[in-house]
Image (cartoon, rainbow, N blue to C red; front, side, top):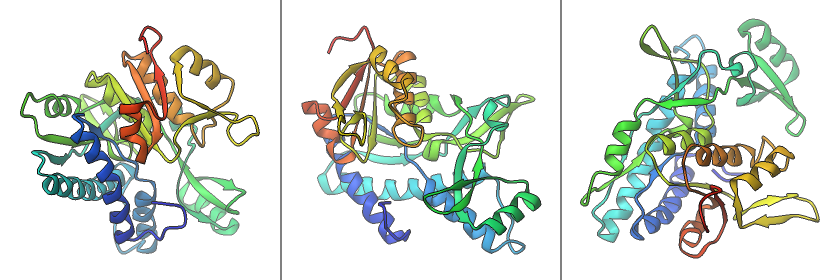
Length: 308
């Protein structure tokens, strides 16, 4: 969604269709890709519907809400992408995988919830929710309301990484374009030899980095709404980064150049991917994807031993 948009099915499909044209361009250039998407507004709506209908329908935990959004957004991406392929005469088909992401039961995030979800509440209602439901809420000065925060543990594995790799690297006539880890993936822990869903959300950028490492991909692309990563963002000294090494961007990250609420998670995901054996990360605007890979647009981050 775009700022100011009404969260309708028509608006969502319009933006999905536009995005998928750019992705189809990339695939037409010969890139085999896996697509990971966010789900913030959609999960917020799922939770809001449950609140409105409280007492009439069961309230699902966050792992099930994430699964619902994976199906919803995955369907939209599948339809738009497969339509693009058909229109262009490309022998490709989009497939969505309901994807589980493994987290640790001992992750500190479970004791310190920090990820805002759902709608904003006035003071009195927020206090009531804290008492009755045990929620933790934080105040947002810009919006003038309180918002629920939930655990956001770090991903440590992807349950379905083997089938994702098989679909992506399926050989000369491989036709599948995979959509996976939607919304950061469904958070699960291992308990008594089984996978068990937990009430949390996983950062989609960190999940993308983990999946890319698990399938032994060399390139991670993070599409966002700006063309570059910037130092001194919003200041008179603001400067775009075009090419930078892992060591150099880690120094900037440690200096606090990339706040948690904006570029921080994306740069952290880039570092995790490169530390895990990846070769290059590109961060750029969605409409610049082809320019970034073919002509060097955007920000390119390299592992220290990779020449560029």
